[in-house]
Length: 96
Image (cartoon, rainbow, N blue to C red; front, side):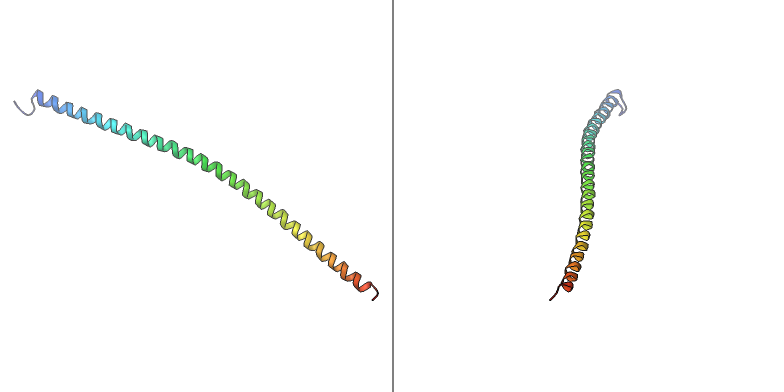
């Protein structure tokens, strides 16, 4: 019997097929894990995108509020200066 006789070839072929099946099963498991990881990352990306959009909107609102309050403070400061001028102007006019 030679090393290439029918029995040895069949056993070798069966080993190759078995090994190929194991590799295929292993690749399938890896593909499932990678697909699940991809789905998780996709969900995380959507969640982070929504959170970012909310934070941007809050930031915009805070900036609007800051600008409005800055303008109000400026108006109040100008009004305060006018009241002081009126007060001192009236003191100078009043008889002592």
